[in-house]
Amino acid sequence: MPASPSTARAINDRLALRLLQQEGPLTAGQLKQLTGLSRPTVADLVERLAAAGLIDVVGESGEQRRGPNAKLYGIVADQAHLAALDVRTEGVSVVVADLLGRVLAEASVPIGGETGTGPAVEQAVALVERTAKEAGVAGLHTVAIGAPGLIDPATGELRDSGGLPAWHRRLVLALQERLPETRVHVENETNLAALAEQRDGVARDRDTFVLLWLGHGTGAAVILDGVLRRGASGGTGEIGFLPVPGTAGLPSAVDCAGGFHSLAGSAGIVRLAEECGLAVAVDGAGDSGEDARGGAGLVRGAAEAAEVVRRAVAATDSATDRVAEAVAAADSARKGVAATGSVRKAVAATGSVPEAVAATDSLRKTVAATDSVPKAVAAMDRVPEAVAATDSGRKTLAATDSVDTGSAPEAAAVREASRFLDALADRLAVGVASVVAVLDPGCVVLGGEVGQAGGTELAARVERRVRRMSPLATEVRAGVLGGEAVLRGALLTARDRAQDALFAPRQPVDQQRRRAD
Image 1 (tube, one colour):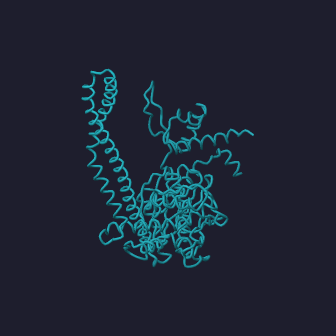
Image 2: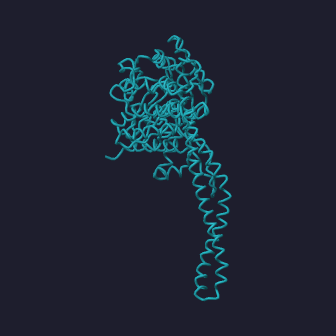
Image 3: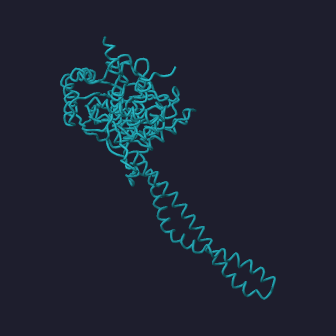
């Protein structure tokens, strides 16, 4: 059944707005080309959207031609303003942005564990209001909140979860009460991180993947065929409760201490580093924020040390290859020099025709050999450099393999760092392999502060172990947004929600009146 004229107009309007949001300002001609609509249809929709205050002329195209330049149309960015919140156990961060997602102001406030529920809520709400004022924003259209815990799929509300501060749930209600005209949306922090990595991070080429959050806590976000999966109770990805070997017991319904969280959370990572002999010095021990940064710092340091060793091995291999090339060239040069002696004999032997013929062949070979002499000489010039590089590489490798750590403290630290990364990869691989066995996502992103800190060094180790544990091909990638992914995902969500509301088809005034009657 063909769409009615009003429905067709609404579809065309939304298509044009999405293109302007994705591509930036466009001319009417560019909209015609991208949408495939006729010129009169594009002209009509531009007029409608401008009359509705959704788009405006923001400039002219740079293309010079007869007559005036084409007008550039863009979304009116200040038609609505947004706020995004990252709610952690130790504080809140907020950004305020325009309708296009451009950040206008940002701030954060720590909230200690000893702070009461009421004062904590007031600090967070006041932070949002203060940041909006600093951005010059009179009102917020949409607020998106990223928080740990379960989101009820039926109500969209943050469920009461054991171990999380009570002010988290109160914050959502307080914002709705304080900002009655504002749409408030709350989402699990790991789900928002996955959204950010898919839109702006390392998973942009993936419609199906799992993000494993590694920070103060652990979690997983599941995106299958481009759709975020929350589960029947909103608990998809609560991997911290996954029973795994190596813990003191089993998790309970109210405590994940015996689950995967015990091994992969920042506190467990710090303990593992101590067991591997790494120096652990974290200011403010016991504070979850410092603990998360401490775990990430340890992983980052270990990954950097492993990278140094990897480069040393690569440099040694390269230097060894250069030495081999130089030695081969030197042998060729020696043969060339020896062959020039036969030239003299060949010239003396030309009195006899058979000998002259043989001498001529010898002469050809000699000339060919002498052509390599300049190359050999150049190669020989590189021998000292190559030998020095090889010696340096051998010393590095020998130091890292040395048992006598007293004579090589730096080498001992490198070995401890490598052992720590391997042990951590063993732990993470258990969780990743469990996810892979059930979902077969093809790609797992190690997100959060720890995943970003481990980088490709940690991701590669985990991938090798998962490859041995599972027959399902799985790529393991390091997240690139780290802890900022939650705030970025919340901002993307707020922008999408606001645009959905503002770009929704608007009924003509006469239709609205008939509905009212």
